[in-house]
Length: 76
Image (cartoon, rainbow, N blue to C red):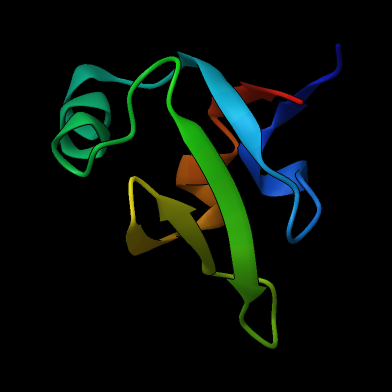
């Protein structure tokens, strides 16, 4: 098992969210978007400058900035 920050996960690779290490306000926003522990998430598109990245989670495409996605720990 490999652990990564979400922003380091290669495109097209699905991983399971293990932990969200951020302040309560950002964590609440991520939870509202469906980014919760044990969910599967897949990066599908990076913008030309690699920020933001679009992720597929629970059938929805969500764009996250690197400063938010680097705080999400995933397992492949």
